[in-house]
Length: 264
Ligand SMILES: C[S@@+](CC[C@H](N)C(=O)[O-])C[C@H]1O[C@@H](n2cnc3c(N)ncnc32)[C@H](O)[C@@H]1O
Image 1 (cartoon, helix red, strand yellow):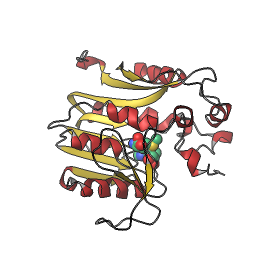
Image 2 (spheres, rainbow, N blue to C red):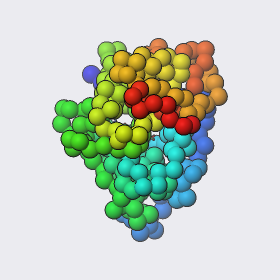
Image 3 (spheres, rainbow, N blue to C red):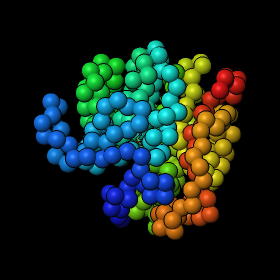
Image 4 (spheres, rainbow, N blue to C red):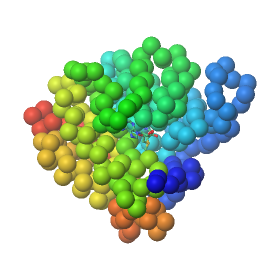
């Protein structure tokens, strides 16, 4: 049986340790966009407008912000945002000039959230939000055959959540989503394309490196947070995956080996 962890801790992982860098407000009813009750607005550095976070949707944390701030200029690019949540990275990509963003999530409320947020800026024509349906939850399940992107973004669920760790909210059983993300990357990238993913060090980065090596993918560090000493509760939540002495958040770029090194 999967136990639900309280929502306040659902904005998971390292956040409690590093603090939140934004303000959460109850949404005013005097809005031109209709939103479900319980929706909050979150102000995120780098976005000029407040993000709507619908109930049950992952509320942006330090992991979200770190990936968002590592999004390069997207002028004219096709971007894929896997596990979009509130849509924070999809929206930054749109703001930075993306030609088109495909945003996916298994949570229907997240798909609604990114659509609402894009509509609030008049960007709905450049956004295609897709729900991951059915049993096939691989990272690229909602894509059409041959669909390719210049930039893939992902802030995946961080921890394995099998067995007695099944209570970890938004966990990734046996890191299956992460593995599928790397296994299918080459097939969905344009020739000079790459993926930017936020993960945690040291053990998560080691895991990424070992999966990437098996898939003939190259890793390059883009940004790294200061060291964090996670609380014992957090280490417990991770099922022992978080190093109890020190951890960090890191954005890495992943590209196929044959594409050659990319400029920083
Ligand atoms: C850590 S949250 C990140 C949300 C957002 N991108 C952010 O940075 O705030 C992970 C998201 O992945 C979604 N997710 C989990 N499994 C997924 C899957 N198989 N395909 C697509 N999205 C998935 C969750 O519903 C959740 O919204």
